Image 1: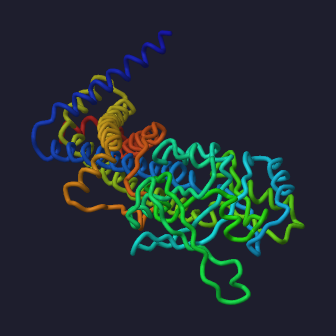
Image 2: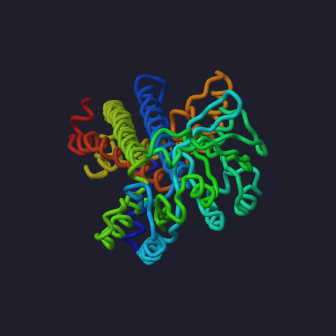
Length: 423
């Protein structure tokens, strides 16, 4: 107990002396370098937290806004027609990790209203299973559109981008041209279908400009498929494990040469890989900035050692061991790292929490949309602050400040008191 109290008093004294050295600095070169070191470290920490929060936001937006509309996995018919699919669907439902298997029919189409045209990807889904699309229903307006869609009929859920291009709103009718199934015997005019827009899907991504949902039976009859479908849409329990889950399902059906198993990574995997690559580049760049700021801590400690060598000599004469002098300068560097790190965490978290409205304000001020949904998978700058990232960045900043304090601390512990008094 006494030994513990001794060490507590000793280190508290050293930290108090280090804090006095840090705060009792007259304006001059050392004061300036000390402030530059603290501010540089804080800005590096803040920039790293802001960058990581933006990457977290893009990852969440990819999961909740893009993957909410597309199947996590698909079993696609090679020739475009999948017969006797019910048995295969039942087998897939028993595969580990797969929570839902729904039939689907997909086709390219041309939507038109008046003189406006837009190429779309039309997808037929089972209206009785529309309630399972809970994430998709969050982005559908009006909220009653899903209930109306489940009743079937010549109804259409249309992406907001397509609706803006065509100039249509909820309740209006559009014409959709579909491929004619009899065109294989010769040229035939495309099938024209009148559909009523009962809801608009606005996710804030590229899908707003391509997606269109109709009842499955309607699209089957128009394409002449009968009871056949073009594929099965799979929903898995963990989106980012979809690739391995789909591969395991494919290994269970090696004899099915008429279908192709694929996950969402086939079409959208590059987005996730790009996010991880940019995250790594941000980590490297900001760590270099923090490292450069910590070099200023080394300079500050060396200047302090030069200016305070008389005080250090007195401490050594009074019996302070060399390791005490070394610990004094380590404490000085540690305080710089803690102050700069906490300041950076505060700035970074504060800016990250308001990053989305800040960017929207800049877009309004300059009358320019930085992330148009026609080019990017989201049309805004998302952000999500994770305390784990803030803690890791702060810990790295403190660790680098300790590394930067090592040489001045070692140098202080090796100086002879007599030489210190002589200057």
